[in-house]
Image (tube, rainbow, N blue to C red):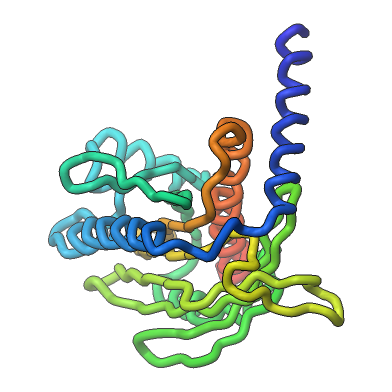
Length: 279
């Protein structure tokens, strides 16, 4: 009972700090040093992914490049019907952390098994996001351009955790095959604009520097692999947000970081529900 009494005020205090953090505009436009660190982080991540996808043999999903025991355990849980979400981090090639002055990077990896479908069915679905009505944080989806290699799409996104933020976004998704039964894609947000008075007649895009800094950058990297009975889908999601004041970081940081995790979880769950209708 004593622990509960202590925990409740801490939670209430954290939520109060988060609400206050969300009412403040970003202190400034994204700084060059913040974007430089973000680009360094993305390059290191993409180098690792490219190296993994370029290896021949039985390895394909990220767990295949970890210890055999961990990889088998994780895949077993996914094939058993669980959606597995894990926090990961990219480091310098020498092993040190990549500091992001003025910003925070949220990097999550998730996997889900979709039974009763083929790889071609999965790829056809993800290339037609305008047909997806299952994801609650996607308010609107519209394809702007589509070829055999890529899709450019508009998404109206909403993120909510005590504080709600709505965005006009534009994304470029590029697809690649890796032999029979395997494919990958990368999706890069080309444009992110936070909306003011979203859903009203006064709705407008905030100018750069006016936004609250909850979502500055968004990349995702996907792997799709056919297995017995269906397709395993894996996604790495990397987002950039503004930094949190030092004193509030222990309380607000986990909540803000959890928004990216929950978004990835919803994305994978919505994919399984949508494609499960085909199975």
